[in-house]
Image (cartoon, rainbow, N blue to C red; front, side, top):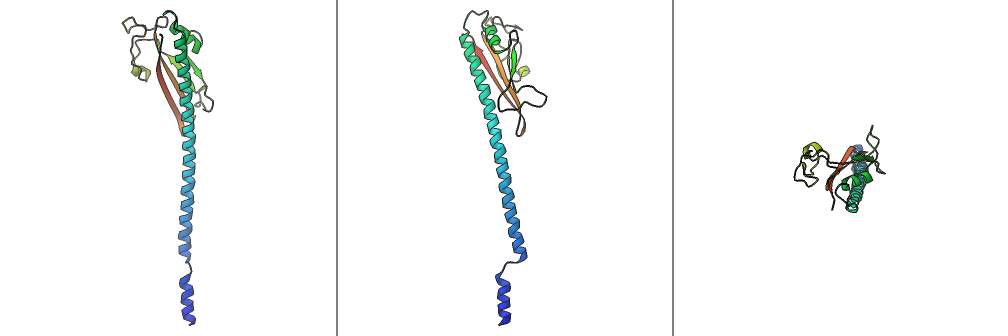
Length: 180
């Protein structure tokens, strides 16, 4: 009888090997859950950054489009009026910051907007699809290298570059401002 109880006691417990396997599986499950949580947190921050950048580009584009509609005066000054209201006078671009986004190392600002007044520039040169070269002043030709004083169509490019959770990020938003 003593031998029988001995056998039952020996067979009724867990072996050290079984306990080690169970602990290894639990450690693997905790590590996997932690990795997934960290990854989801980074993805959530990346999505937030992207939404902030898209909203900033959309708000600026809407502002510029509204300025274009509000400046429907004589042909000779429309495009210059629009660029002067957005940029410093006599320039065709301006840099800006976006709260919540960090500029890339070595850069002072996150975003920039650039207006195109050279009809001869191509989409390939600009790096965005704007349908360029294009007749911007309505004279029937695409040969003007500075049509700021006569343009009725004003291509613009908003570009945002920031240091994101997953490294360098970039958003480009090309659009056309139309003088009515």
